[in-house]
Image (tube, rainbow, N blue to C red; front, top):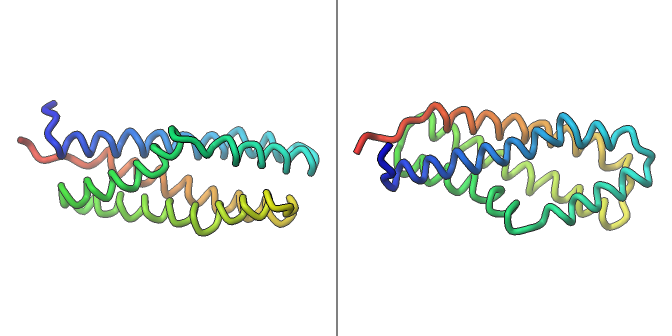
Length: 146
């Protein structure tokens, strides 16, 4: 495989999208089910701790790298499957920014589990699906031969 700028961007998009989808899936299959079984105070404390610890350079690199590199790949390579991947990556980002982060912020400011958990899990499920679908599209995409 020749690492042209296009293949490098596509590889980076695949890597970031895969890592992000994996983080999201881990919450669906392990983290949230484990927290669901906890009492309210323990649930809120754990979510607050998670929401603080996840704000770090490595997560931000993956979180922003996935949509930025996917959009860049779509612009550079211009295939329908990459346009779909970019759209799904942007939906994933928007759900996070418009729904999940504000819910995290309200919980940190003294919100209750009852006002948080159901909506957060629902929209987290949506962003998990869109993130995985974006990854699948990225994996199906082909960079042009040099």
